[in-house]
Length: 127
Image (cartoon, rainbow, N blue to C red; front, side, top):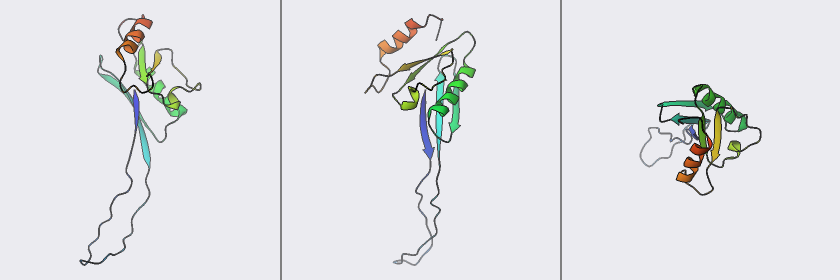
């Protein structure tokens, strides 16, 4: 599971002008961001994603609910998360069919023992 910010800011404005002149041009300085939250299950080739205007605990709760809705009844989702504040908040509403596994600090990818420990701790069949 991960999230990413997307949007556009700072485009160039171009106008026709005589060489050597520096004309002024009106430019739209407004911009906005959108956050993409996404998670995939490579085994089933399915995913869950939402696009939200901001990132916070409420947005994470919306994403967890969407993931929970996409998990089949007899399955359990294990999400490997980085240390973002909204991933570890006590205000998270964690569905029963989801387990959160935090990445250790300074770890760019999940360590093998972390994945094996998650698999052993969940005796619910295939992940």
